[in-house]
Length: 109
Image 1 (cartoon, rainbow, N blue to C red):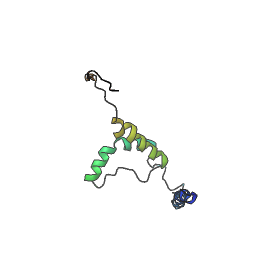
Image 2: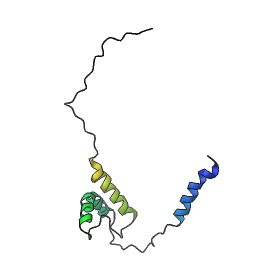
Image 3: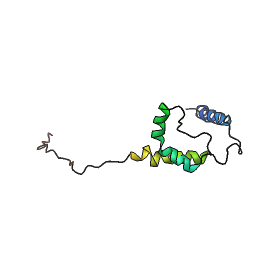
């Protein structure tokens, strides 16, 4: 791979990142949802998602929100408290492994 081919994706990513619009510092109201409401919204995500399919006024994600802290709370709520926390490994004690006896091995040389 040539050097130009390796640098092209990085240059394209930087060019797209330069086009990203950022909110003004005073654009978010002080009473906008923050970390704790993001945590709650992440926790109730499965219920809110289902309700958003049936009821148009229900949304999964609060907009406008506080920004990064709301996103972080939402992520923690989904992954650790909500849907993602059910991914535990189950160990069955009553099931044992059985060994098979393959008989005598004869080596042919």
